Length: 156
Image (cartoon, rainbow, N blue to C red; front, side, top):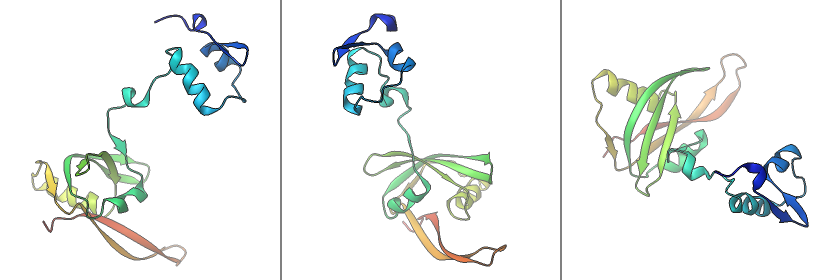
C-alpha cells in the first residue's frame, strides 16, 4: 500500500491527500466528490468489504418482518444495560441477513423457552413474525401509551 502522503489529487486547483483532509477537515467538499477522491486514491474502505454481511435491524424495524418468511439461523443470550436480551440471526425470503436484538416477553422469551427445552436447530418460519399491540401503563407515572410485542410466528 502506498504511503498516504504520496497519494495526491488536484481538487479545485489544490493538491489533496488523505492526511491533509484529516488535518484540516473539509467543509467545502460534497459527499460524492470526497468519496470519488478517496476511492481514486485507494484510501476508501468500503463498508461491504469490512462487515460480516449481517445488518442490525433497528427495534422499529421488526414491524417490517411481520408475515415475511424467514429462517432463524442462530440465537444467543446476552447481558445489557436493561437486562438479559437475545441476539437473533435471521435470513429472510428476500435474502436479507439481519440481526435482531430482543429482550421482550415475545421473541426473547420464546427462544429462551426453546433453548431450555434443548432446541437448537434452525427455525423455519413461513409467516415470519407476528405482532401484538396493547396499551402499556408505566408503574411509576401511571401514564399509558401504545406498545407492541413481536413474536416468532409458529402457526406454520
